Image (cartoon, rainbow, N blue to C red; front, side):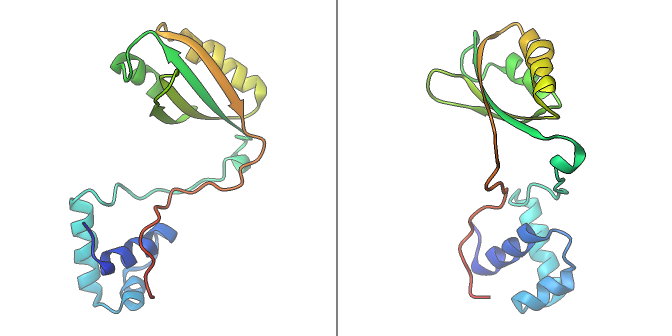
Length: 154
């Protein structure tokens, strides 16, 4: 799927997507044009899904993270329910899960009052939602979106 040089480039980009191309080229000992071409090919193949800014949720007033297990009337992956949940701005992640629940949601809100409002006024108004179980995060020890690509010697 990817070779060692691609893995090196991707590891660098995962740490800092704004790093100048010339610096990536220096770190992987390639010409800048060769690095650009590799990144372009990784983009085209869908290996690089996008570039985004990581925001500090707490600094922006979103001090509460919760995980919500959702049971629905629809079968697993019911597209109507999935679309409705995906429209909710507070929902950061939606996972179809195995077991007695249908979905696992990761939600960020300001505080418990806003969580209650979200549960009642938004999630609770989706007709197919039968029940929910909520776990509130007390402390996030590790949160990252980087993938564990093979370690490289460089």
